[in-house]
Structure formats: structure tokens, C-alpha cells
Length: 115
Image (cartoon, rainbow, N blue to C red; front, side, top):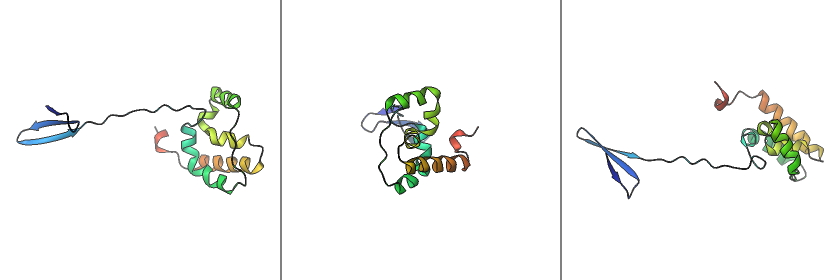
């Protein structure tokens, strides 16, 4: 197998054919679970429409509250935005979070959680 350094490609000769195999690298980007996590990713399609109807912008929740939820495992399920909305001083944020979470629970299981 030859290596073409200009294109980051491996060239493999198979019989009379030349097959080019492009090398792909997967890089995992680590994020702070107190800012964004899989729960946020899962709930985004449900939470965003409800939060758009809210009259006030969602304010950041204190890190101490988020750390408590992270250690109990709750934050990774609900996500930071939903947890923050649940603890908001505005009732329409809390209402949006509850509606979004209810819709998420009633929706079909995401393929990444099956099996």
C-alpha cells in the first residue's frame, strides 16, 4: 500500500485496479457538561419552540445548582437549558420546560438509545 502525503490518501493496488482509500480521523470534542450535554442535544427540538413563545430570555442558572444536578445524573438527562428553564423565576420558562420534556418522553425512543 502506497501513501500519498499530499492528499492524505492511501493507494491500494487490487489486481489491475487502483483503489484510493481516504483516511478519516474522528476527533471527540469535549464540552463542559455544565454548559451543554447530550440532554440538551436530545431536547433541543422540543424545547426551542416552547422557549421562543416565552416573553423573557432564559437566564443562566448558578453553577452550584447545575453541579448538584450533574452529580445526581439528572442534568445529563434533562440538559442544561431544560434544567435552567425548570428553575427559572418566570412561569412560562417552567411551563415550556415541562411541555418539552413531556413531548420528549412521549416521542419514540431515539435510535442511539435502542439496544
